[in-house]
Length: 85
Image 1: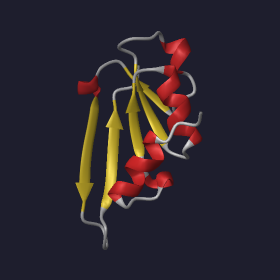
Image 2: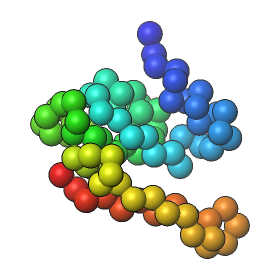
Image 3: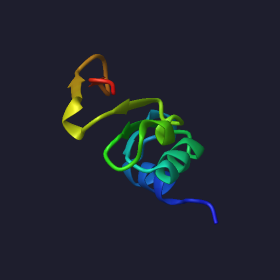
Image 4: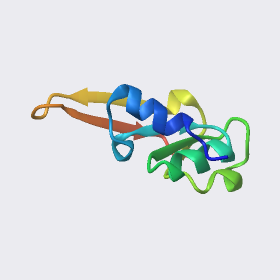
């Protein structure tokens, strides 16, 4: 059965999946988000880094992720900075 959670969340937010970033700590969640066409930040809190390699980037802890929104044109720009693991 295909995962419908990620596409459903994007639809409810009215955001195309390719403009979404998912924070995940499990390989299955990373696979599901990637299958939905989303970018993935993996947290190495429950699985070793080798199991999270499918993610776009990895962080040790949630506090290693900094998100800011700047008002560049209509819609703004989301910047995510990560202290990479």
